[in-house]
Image 1 (cartoon, one colour):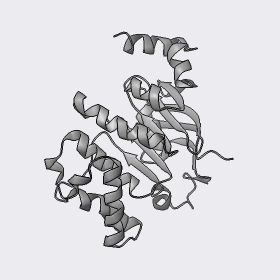
Image 2: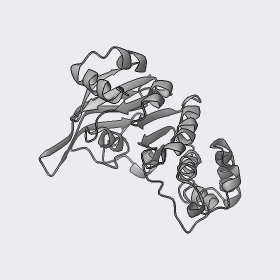
Image 3: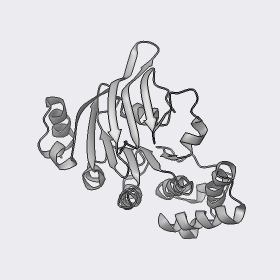
Image 4: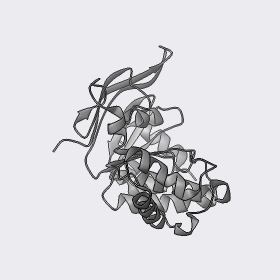
Length: 246
């Protein structure tokens, strides 16, 4: 079976001199949860953003569900509609209610009528644990609740893939767990997921495979427990020694 996501020798250079991604090969199977970790500035978020071409690779190929996104004949909007993306910021429209935020893309991209979009929105709000917030505005919500709305909005589009770019980094510490619990639950449903995070406990609990990136390359990959407890590369070992010291 072909992988759901495949990066082939993906490189991304900024200003012709900064090699953010320096030749990454990565396959993600259908239903697999891959968690990417690494130091700040290592290129991990850029790799993630290359998957849906929010960052267009300088070279290499990105294949999603059997289609090359680098092929000019591929409908990028159609391909992106199958990939939910959750960012560090919540990117909610402040003038719209939670329900309106979740139904907008459903109606515009999926062509659903208001009744169907609303039903799905309510289902997803229940799924992320805040069904009572449908008529609230983003400013009335905590950061953790806003991020859960952002996740519900992505799930309402029925994507085949979910991409998370450090989804808890903008949250206060007490709000991090409520968001991570939602993502862990989602991982258990068999959704194909790629998550960039600095939350090592979450990586240990949710990942099928851990990928350690440094200086734009994949240094080490494997089952989380193996990579955490018995890293094979000195760079990986130094990273975990530093962040797991306390």
